[in-house]
Amino acid sequence: MASNVGITLAQIRNGSAVYQLDATNPVDGVKAVQKALKLLGYYAVNTDTYDGKMGETTVAAVKGFQTENNLTLTGTVNKQTLALIDSKLLPIYSDGHILKPSVNAIRYGFDYAGRGCSGDGVNKIRSLLINKGYSVSSSGSFNDDLYEKVQAFQRANHLADDGSVGQRTFLALENSTSSTGWISSTGKVSLTAGLLAQCGFWGVLLNFYVPQLNTAINNLSTTYAPDLAAKKALAKHFLAQCMGETSNGRLLVEATYKAGIGGPARYSPFYGAGLLHLTFLENYEKFKKEKYPSDDKITNPPTYATQHVAIKYPGPSGSWFWNKFVSPKVTNWKGDSASICRTVTYEITGSYNDATTRHGHYTSLGEVLK
Image (cartoon, rainbow, N blue to C red):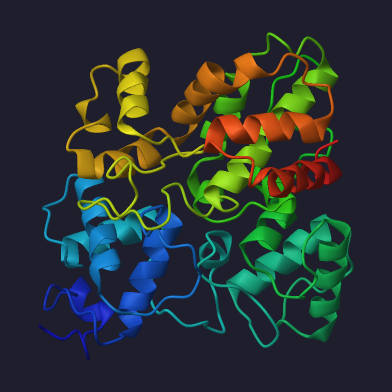
């Protein structure tokens, strides 16, 4: 087996090397690629630590990215693949934390700003805090004063008060929509990444799919949600299920799925995909037939179908499944929220096991979305 030891991202960018299958040796550049693919929605692992090994799961993520973006299917991180990753996310320079994180590195969740940091990312944080009414200098390093002001902002906005600024805190700082402005008097939902960050979402959903999430909610059947209070409840129940299905927005494909392979689940290779993790061949076939009959990639090739639905149709697949299987089971969205959540959870997962956790999400959502 070839080794990736000593190969840098710079070498891949200039075309003099590639990262290839090597399940033994950890490499910092591979860690950076793993993190980037996770933030783009392709690396299907339910962890935020990266081993830097180009093993089967990482190779599968690379293949999924190449297939979905019409690149030559090699399973290696080559010049063409890395260039497209860079263009979709941001240039990925290193896996480790750097002391001058860029604005986009923080916004996308690739890095964070904390004590000792400086540069454009930190100055942007200062500017956003000033816009929120906090008294801080407009420039300077991430000092103790800035740390304390960040903590104060976090405490006021349902965020962990660790004093550092990662994706969730940064997006909350950028947010300009109020806790009541997320839904109109007629029930139209216009959630922002910042509000969703305060609710507990992060990762790929916040990076790319907030518009699809809004459209999905606005496409939900409101037959039994005749007034604004009912529409709010309906939206928050949908969001609570999305949190449960996607690990708070971090996984649009079910963990353990491997593009080009599938996985050990009995419904493999048609793993969970999208906001509500559409699962099973029959549901993929019905979704294709009723919504996108001309898109054969929804079902073929089967081992890449999950990746395709997750990346292209996470919102439409979620609202379609909800309207077809969930909405008919609930006739009063203003009823007891725990009972509703139990019913909805069963329709989505086939079990009541996670209902309590998802009702906890529903309750937490209500603390932010008034």
